[in-house]
Length: 234
Image (cartoon, rainbow, N blue to C red; front, side):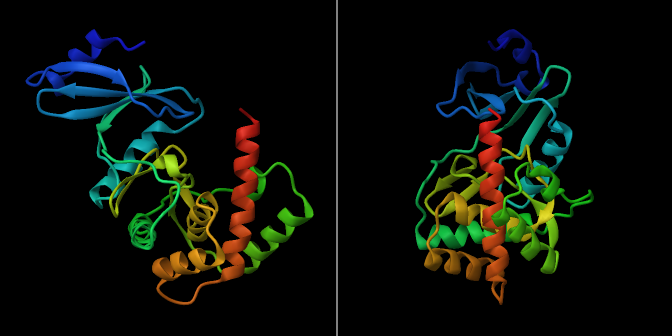
């Protein structure tokens, strides 16, 4: 339940009062999401559900992504009450991408990966709980490949991408952290079940040069296992 009175007192709404606060259609696992409408603007209110997430870091990293034009801008954060207000990103979630959307997402990732990641990279090997022969082989491939640590989104499932034609906005930066850039590339390939042809197109759009196909495949295996364990835990 949203305490509307408390939000109406915020300076953000002093000269543009709230008309309505309504749940959005698609709810996430980590937040309860509401649409705030005023006479002039539309905002997204996120009430935090998931514990153990560095919300201050999430807010800061999304601000940086917004400055690059690839994410809605965060406006207010209250760690005590457990909420964030951002710009509202209009759009739809897609399960299948056209070639132009494939390219647009690759270019958005290029921008995201230019953001500095002044933090230790994720310890992927420790995050994976089950180490089968396939998983071990994937980590050996990853270890043998050059490390390319950047700021990654780390959760690029279709629900975290909002599309308007070929324009895409990245949302939900809860798990954004330093990681190998191949992980985000592989996450897209896995989430959209790319064929070898679609994967090759996406990687060509993103890397614009030679890339390590075996590393993409290894990261797809690791990402797939992490998702499996994450959902099993819920």
